[in-house]
Length: 42
Image 1 (tube, rainbow, N blue to C red):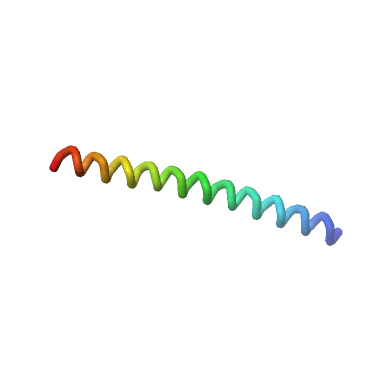
Image 2 (cartoon, rainbow, N blue to C red; image 1 turned 90 degrees about the vertical axis):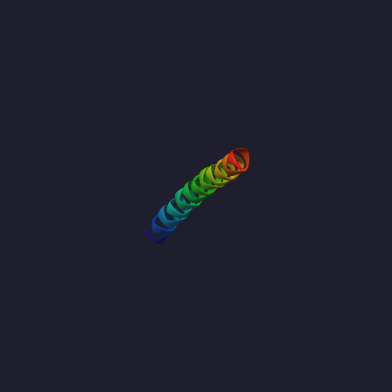
């Protein structure tokens, strides 16, 4: 029972980490694109 709960929490943590990594990469690319656009316009 305890092992099952631990496995569930580990899986949840992994999914959360992957989601955070995807958001970080996506946010990073948006930020750089915005920065390059601003430089092009100026």
